[in-house]
Amino acid sequence: MARELIPGDTTIRNIKPGDSRRRLSDGAGLYLLLFVKGGAHGWRLDYSVQGVRKTLSLGTYPDTGLALARRKAEEARALVSQGVDPSDVRKQARADAQRQHQEAKREAAGLPPVDAFEPVAREWLERVHSHKVSANHAERTRIRLEQDLFPWLGRLPLAAIKAPDVLACLRRVEGRGALETAHRVRQAAGQVFRYGVATGRCERDPTTDLRDALPPVRTSHHAAITEPGRVGELLRAFDDYRGHAVTRAALRLAPLVFQRPGELRAAEWAEMDLTASTWTIPAARMKRSLTGKATGAPHLVPLSLQAVAVLQELQPLTGHGRFCFPSPRTDERPLSDNAILSALRRMGFGKDEMSGHGVRAMARTLLHERLNFPPEVIEAQLAHAVPDALGRAYNRTEFLDQRRTMMQAWADYLDRLKRGGADVVPLRPGNAAA
Image 1 (cartoon, rainbow, N blue to C red):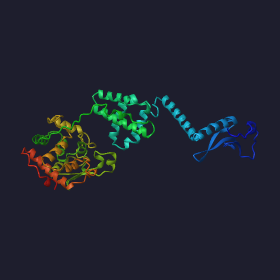
Image 2: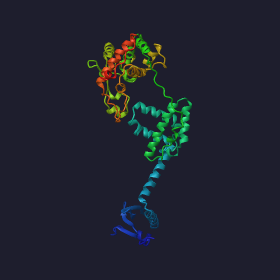
Image 3: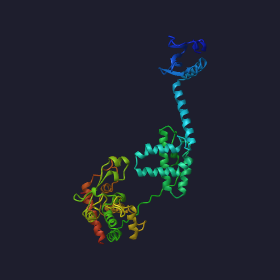
Image 4: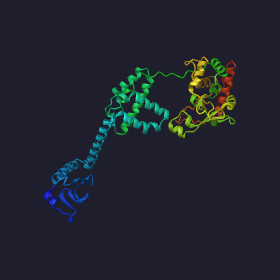
């Protein structure tokens, strides 16, 4: 029990302005600070926690009388005796009250609780995900969350969601025949939960318990023609295409450079150096992480004589504008992916036979199997980030001399196939990499 020195409230009420005292002590650290806060008296408690001296405000007189001040002081001393800082307890109480107030406001506005799955997921999208991936990737993730998780989990506290709750959502996605999407939804949910763990909204990620809960996705490769005779038929069909001239040029150039369809369609004349026979694709247009797009090196594509000829033939038609392959509707946009696919279908190549990405698989297969070029040179030309034995990713400017040799050999090989000639004798590995 603390030693009490203030006789009673009457003593406090009899204090008049001009009193020379600055405080009245009630013992054990409790005292009344006189004439503070506009003339009122303020209760204070001095205490020490882990050797650090602190002061706690206990209210003002007369709202807090002597008896109440002593009771508050006793409660604070009890916390100190347990090694708990009463100031921290008060701050937590205020934070809890503020959170409850905010939750009440959100509920009145029809919004989910602040620690519910939806607001935490949106916070993760804005603060983390959008800074790591492309805008299109982030948008696809947002749509998956909104369509497949928020309607069922959005208003639930993150810490209250269990693995079966998430699995029920994934089963709905699987049930509509979108198994790959179900796996991507699980991946996005796991990232949200891990962000929740990091920010103190939950203790663990329940999606780790769902790794074997969904059937595996059957990998399907892009349809591609890789048999030399059929490749010759494909190339002759490209040359004979009677559709839009820009589409025909894109079809003819695609197998000569075998870059991704989006990179080819959006090619700009400013990227082409026909004198140096080089196409320089900016990092921002490559399939890379957001950081790779912002800080990575451009991808260099050596152009064969045949590729330069296609571009020179196209230049009078579109060279006045930005894009090599502009849309037929406007010069402000590149050719659509559907234009290439539609052209393939009109020429009689079905979707299970040839795709826009198919020229990449075609080149990779034949360059290695028929022309004996080293895989690392081919992968560098495909702009694949393949690590070497030391874990470094191939520099996209590496093997440039070898790739120039390879691209010309590849174009000459395609010409022979297009003429219907016999398949060539494979090059020796030493010559291929020279």
